[in-house]
Image 1 (cartoon, helix red, strand yellow):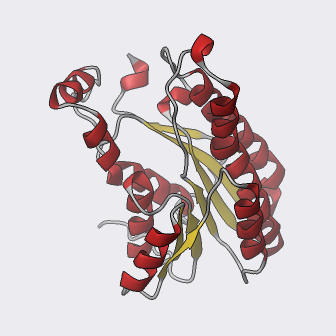
Image 2 (cartoon, rainbow, N blue to C red):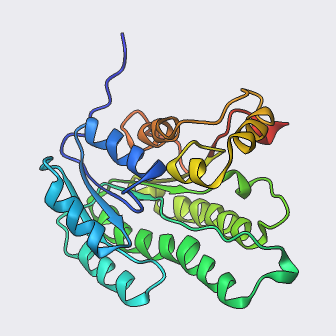
Length: 249
């Protein structure tokens, strides 16, 4: 008999939840009964999504993690919530550049979005979670948090930093029943992957993966769903690498 995950009564925030892995995560949480708030950077898109949404448990809010004022406003929004049970820090960017060619502006941008953003949102959410003695935080890292390749110095440093943040928060908040974990996706067939790679590129990458295929976004979402559900009552501070065996080769 299949185990049914029930998140009825839970409130979740998924950053970068308008597309790709973030959207799949939001969809899984909604299917399990949670109330889900998704963020996106573009106000016009957020307005349109709110107008088009027919699900009373789904709403969208603008959040630009590169903007301090936007993050300030969003943290104030979290502070005004009655409760928050689940936070998925999914939003992030990647700029590919070798170390000697990387400018300080790109370095600072990736650090602000990929690391400072999750730090500040987790800090705001944990104020509520620790008081309520319940919370689940999942930080979406990357396979480049455990391995690397040329051109990934800054991106890898933000994702490795995110693992350090995850582990420390898990230790500090465990006594409040707030479990903090990371999920590190491997190569995943999102809209962006299709538009930035040729058919030959996709085949070449697939051949490097022991399962001989790239992941579907919902395969990442399933891992997140487990970690934020009541099936997980004792896993914290861990990095769940979902990559078809790529980093084991």
